[in-house]
Image (cartoon, rainbow, N blue to C red; front, side, top):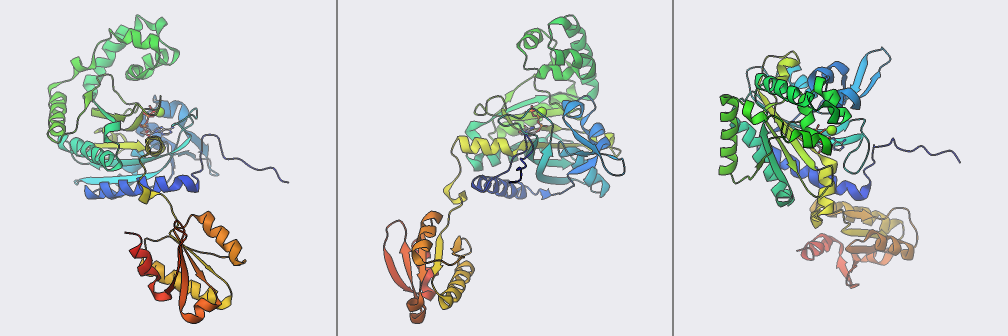
Length: 425
Ligand code: ATP
Ligand code: MG
């Protein structure tokens, strides 16, 4: 036998027993974002490598060590998208959607990062991203957070996630803070973990994110970003908090929260959970007023967030929050015996699908005797099995068996949809 080829490490198949959870989550998100007036945008999975180098930042984990970059047959450097924001900006700007107007956009799809695969962390993973453009005031930051809170509420997750908020100020404020942080940390350079030592010269803010105990200990007495935040950023942050509070959205301020991507400023936030171990963040975002310009567009204020679908699916499964209606279940299994009954069974199946489009109607294919077909009906876990033989067809009727009670009755063919409707209340 030929050797079987396996999937690539860290890239998962979503099998039929999981896909209904994905569909449920995607459908719920689509409904919520639409109700806030967000429209979907779709862009390619592959972009020029420079888009991410410039858009995400040369000194970020993503660009330094996580991108899937390759040359195409023309020798051009292309990259599988590691995130959606840079592509979303590229696409919207290229189409002229960012010029003197506001936009509310969302997208979903696979992202690729070469990370160490573990629970909640994969090499191909999926995000849902929501981005807004052209609005500089804190009300839009608040709208996005309130939108995400509504989504958690709809999914039954609101009590299971915590909103962490911070402001990282303007670029100039961050520069001043970076200088103070570097000055302080340089004294303790030998104590810092290896990554943090390197970041001292490349991306010192990221050191605040370090999970290493020794580094965290040194950080205890480090200068605080809060002390470097100017009046404008502070006022923006306070307005955001006031709107959230007025809307009953609770939050904690985490002054160490920075975000790994270079383009953020002012608002940053994360929704975290205690149920997923180290992969605790299910949704992360913030304001990125500098990105459009950094990618060659006209300066455009922007704010957005992205959530990790795998982590949300894990959370829904862990907490058993998938409603029964979202689970795949066969309602009716139709079996028939003989050519004429086979034709009638097609007519019946199509009638049911026409009259009751929500029903899952499985028409047995592949022949076989009634006994074998009944085994398939059992295996399908259908609620009802319809049996059509020569005699039934001749009489314009069928047998309908309620699979949980075992009760079987004879019904006119044109009453099957009504019968199932009456038994589904
Ligand atoms: P982390 O700190 O967990 O690496 P990140 O800061 O790199 O996250 P973002 O780039 O902000 O993550 O992506 C937004 C969300 O996408 C994350 O909060 C997470 O839910 C999800 N995510 C990011 N990387 C992965 C991955 N490798 N596998 C699964 N989900 C991921
Ligand atoms: Mg990461």
